[in-house]
Length: 132
Image (cartoon, rainbow, N blue to C red; front, side, top):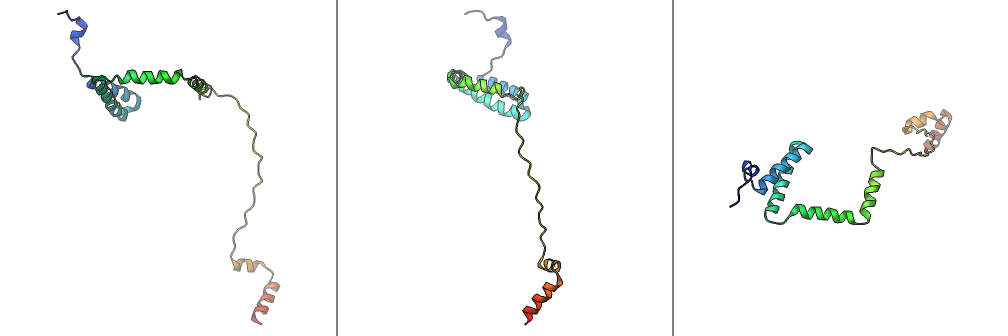
C-alpha cells in the first residue's frame, strides 16, 4: 500500500453532502446574510448529494453555460449589457414635452347657491310662473 502524504493525514474525511452544505452556507452567508446562509446550505447539500450519486451537477451546469455563450446571440447580449451598464451614462438630449396651461376647475355649487348667484328679478319671475 502506498504511503499517504502529510497533507491528506491532516484532513478528516467528510461526505460530499456535508462539504457542499458548509460551503453553500458560508458563501450564502457572505452574500445574503443569515437567510442566504440557510438557503446556501440547503442548496449546497443538494448539490453534494447529487454529486455523491455520480450525477456531476456542477459539470452539467458549466456545460450549459458554455453552450449558452457559444450561441451567436449571447455575445451580443453581453455587449449590449456592457453598453447600458449603470456605471457608464451616455449624455442624451430629450425634447421637453410642451407645457400645458393649467385649467381652472369650477367649484361645485348646490342649486341654492346657484340660485343665489342669479339676479333676484329672474328668480322672482320664475316663482311667479310656478305659482300661477
